[in-house]
Length: 290
Image (cartoon, rainbow, N blue to C red):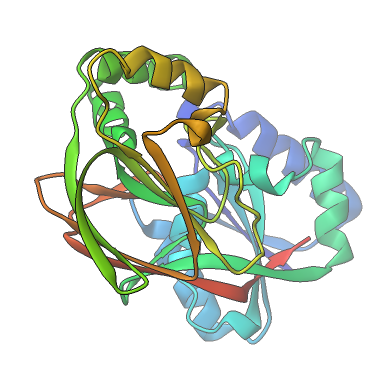
């Protein structure tokens, strides 16, 4: 028996065709399931929390994007009695890309029917928030805010339009971070705290990340000097930004960050008003259907 949570607005609703194909394949094979449609923000969290409380052994399939996956993760209270099956139907699908999930409906169905479970990592943020893929602040938040303001149909084209606008109107952000007991204030372009690799539908922000290694990869790009904006952008698009002098990477189990301006903090593409942030990699606790 599977509980299936689906987001009808993922990828502006175009994911429904893929969802219907999946359900048809389940019906063809006589697989038992119950459907749960998300109707508002954080609804997936509420559904997962209720299933986790009322069932001793839950197999919950999540249809959606990174945001819906992140919501589902937030709802788990007992990690030993629930396993998530993640089916990417969003715009970016960055976590699925890093995990190398199947691309065909039949492959997903066969994977879930086998019922094999593996454990993997997530990021605990403060006491009450969790991140599956990548969190952070700076340029990525600026892009998300611009993307939300675009009136045209959402999707990759709109995301890259937002990216271009942010690059043309580049701004920097003030942070204070602590690593290994050393605290430092910096002006940064972006700081990404990564479990996964990708953001923005395939941009490889943290190429050294290995999901499941028990470590965070913190990628920080400092304020750019005059004339370095476009060279940095081209390096980023070619996944060569780690070699630039403005970029630093820290690989740790924990990371402390304080936002010193009015910037927001993003967790799996969702925006939060946080100022003091403690990130800790939680190793091998999340159970996923493999």
